[in-house]
Length: 454
Image (cartoon, rainbow, N blue to C red):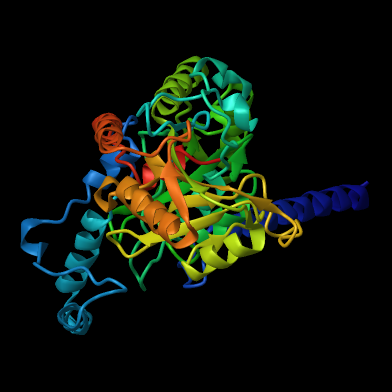
């Protein structure tokens, strides 16, 4: 009996020792450790008092103090010698205040850039019409049948892809934010509030589903505290908050309920993976906003066309190709048209107008056997900046072709263009430019190019 009691006591003591040891191990495992340089996540930020603080408000909370607002020129890739000297002087500044001021200035200087509905109709030079045509002519989207009626048989345009391809990739100098893309004028924006800062290296692998929602582009940007600016998520950068946006409309049509649901599901998955809270918009309101934007874009989606008609024998496609190539026009990837590019105010090459030779495909057709008497020059009005006087350039080039090729410049009814028709066209164009400007989308701007693309 004494031995049995001793064994029971010994078992109880051993059990208590095991429990005590396990508790010690648990406390040891939960003990906080010092943050290591290779850690992905920084320490938790101080909690925000108001639960309704939005990312744009959070950005404003980091406004630089007056004493840090140093007058300095922002460095650019195409800087003049004086600009380069200013950049070198700025990089040589060693004080922490100067570095912080440079980051603040870059954030303030970073302007958000961000471009619809059905394709527009070519406008008769004689009639100076600026109305839109039914987008069904180029097979983009059935919803645009009510936009306008097509009045002549010029081949449907497909300039959205070249215009989009011509957009430059955001360029970021070392330590400086890339230009923001998301724009509330054409995007449905969903703020994502992070519980703690997160790095681009952690975020990027989780954004595989956030490329497109149906036919609409999706963009994700992070709020970078060092620069006090939104920028496309970049590896190696830390972000306080995120915002994800889907485009409300493009030349494929308005954002529909199915595309919205696909977008929301992807955002919710990202928020769960990052332990973030998402402010999801109302589907009915968002879809309605997309339809309204699509209707506006359809009313402005206009293409001007002028024709160069041979006075004699037909031209071979090989001859037309030679002339276009010598004039510096670039053949499109599908081979159906040549494009004239022109540098904008920032020095970026943008598509100005296209040249088409009937239904000729310069990559597949036998250019020596293919012939015709009509060359069509088409100007995509919303995609060309007004300051470059695109229609004047198109007409000047058309007259140049006519003189060199033994032809004449005519309207769609094969009548020579007159001075009165040009005056009427310029008046219609000015009305269209003013309409786009009033909406905050000047012709040729980045946001307009996104809206009038696919």
